[in-house]
Length: 101
Image (tube, rainbow, N blue to C red; front, side):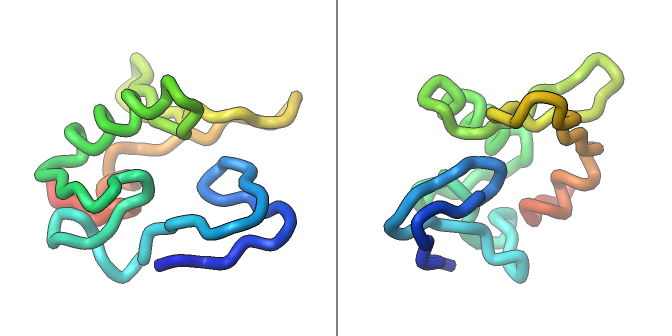
């Protein structure tokens, strides 16, 4: 799904200005061929493959998920001072991106 951004809008934890941004359509998951943010049309068979792809993009400032020692995942992105990190369980990420375990 494409959305038109105004002067500035927060999308997926990133601040973007002007133009168009691609966002996930919650009705579809990549496990069934849906679109994912920052996937550039690629299909990922597993959540782990998609998370590895996002981690690679992290080198250019794209938000990604880091696995924590307790098995949960922390969204790695810029955030204002004092804002708590966003933490997700594996199940939450599976549901968010439409993958089956």
